[in-house]
Length: 247
Length: 247
DNA sequence: CGGAACTTTGAGTCACTTCAATCGGTGTGG
DNA sequence: CCACACCGATTGAAGTGACTCAAAGTTCCG
Image (cartoon, rainbow over all chains, first blue to last red; front, side):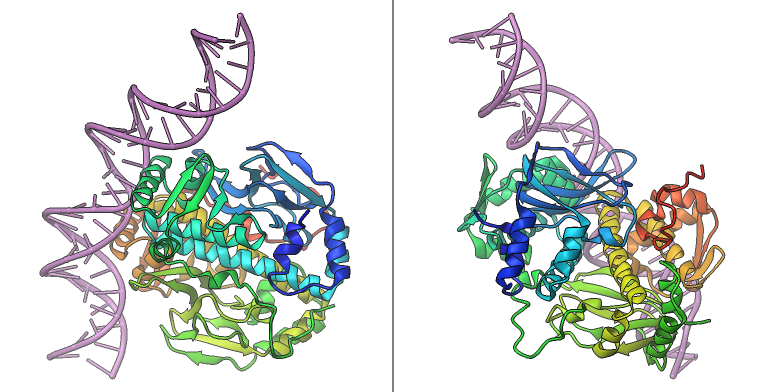
């Protein structure tokens, strides 16, 4: 079976076999979680690092009136919390969106991995990409109208899922509800619904039974003004000598 | 006394004298930049690390139609780009909002500093707080209405400026335009204007001649649902594992 | 003093929201 | 095997927060 974590991290640069073994060990024996269950809650003291191996999860924050903002989608290969070593409490919650397999990696194991320069750099890369995605989402929500937001989100998820081998051409599983898409994009579920219908009417995509098919990738990218530069793929292929990782 | 970087980093935890000397050296001889000038542009190859010593700057992204989203405000003490070591190109631009003093720190100097454990942890903390701020902004823009957004932003800036000694009680310099506030909050300048008038009418704050005065901190915090937990202050004081419950 | 930049005001419009049903698929228990 | 319940998707209608356009008032500054 594929190691989604290794697969993702190697998008940054190749890893030594030893490092990949470490990753394989870390990802073994995931636990199964049902849909809509919290993995960590805001305010919790930081503990293990979590990794999604299968299914969808999200980071989210709540308002007092119950409104929810999803601030990140976590797909297989995504590490939930690298900041465990520095911060004391969670400033957001993490929950599954679909049934999922999650691995709890003890701090010690992470520390062991960060001794390896290539892994340390790869983890750092993943963290920086997460941050870049946040900036892109801010642009998405702050400036684009509903159809563009949805188009952009779908292009991003497509790119990220392709990275870990979870897209079949222009088709991928999207096991989340329209309400959840709304929570991520700052839109009401109803408006997400109507916008999706418009996208379908334009023959840009199909979304049924939790499966999304991109019918016209070019026009969808154009509509969402999607450019994948912020995902910083192939960042490790530096031709000129790079600084060694600290350590 | 006026090393804003040291001041900010010590909000995380005390630094050895040697480390503080390193910071002092790094912050010396800043260059002066006028308002509204780009420091780095999206697409540029990564180079030096930049640090704002005085004045306001921002990270921003543009849409094809010219719409701008400010994805972060950079105030004195804020490091612009710690990710220089990993990523090859900028995925966003950085510009001054007011006249500013900026230091360009060469990679080598940063590497030297990250050899010191306390400094390395402090830099990591700063990076993680930046990320937490992005999540909070996403919540702000995605879920709150205009007045709440503005209230929240002002509370955050107040907290961050206090950290580096740039707030005089509930009063601080805010050298940016209403249009720029709008670009940060996903609102039109006109709507920012009307919302500010409403906040003034409620006797929550004053904003004139680029000086902001918070008249009623409690009600402003309530309106913006502001809680500073995401700024992760005092994260370094790890002797007590549990948080005190002061109220 | 004049001009540029910023703020303020007014009026009309639109994107998105809320409320209120309805429809459809799926799972459960009788 | 059907009745019921539940959840998610869909539809309709009405309301509103925020936008655009246009213009006037202020402040800043050479």
